[in-house]
Length: 230
Image (cartoon, rainbow, N blue to C red; front, side, top):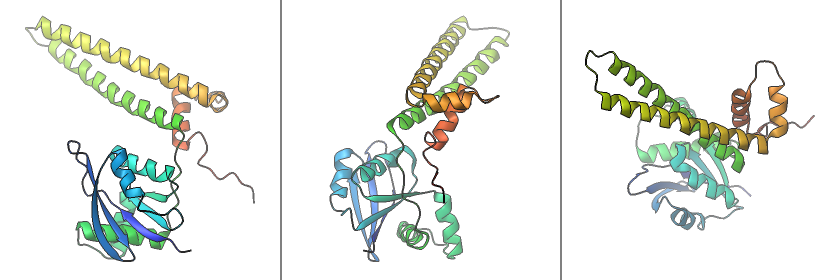
């Protein structure tokens, strides 16, 4: 049975109203529906689909689109997650220069039909947790560097505000402790879920726990590969 292509494209995701606009294409007919970007709202949309007939194509929109992606996957609906750059290059090939929501929606649906992108493979819960911790650690490290640089610039002044220096010292100490705590939690999860892989990776000269964890995240614990032998 041929799949009916539904193109799901976030025209707007508001962090205040928390709504998501979905552009739906069914047999070349465009219609627009808007649902709350919540579990209840997304499920209201999903119940309109049929597992054996519908196939969804989504542009990668970061964390705000992940709820829809996750619930589609949990519902057994085939879904592909496409890099926006791929759509951009495809539009150039098709010589489409007009940028409207309707044109973009149709272009992504056409991309799905013409290229048959791979079905998205949902990472394990452990991988999802590790990615979140890794992201927060990276941002906290940036804040830590910025805080240290600011403190150094204050020290260089001929007249120093001691209260400001104390505030910066507290901020630096807080960020350092938070990073250390998250790194410990990250290592615990990685060791508990991927002990064998970690031991194998860290046995290689030059690979420590940080790089080994990054490799696990990039490969989904080495589950993203087709290891079948022809």
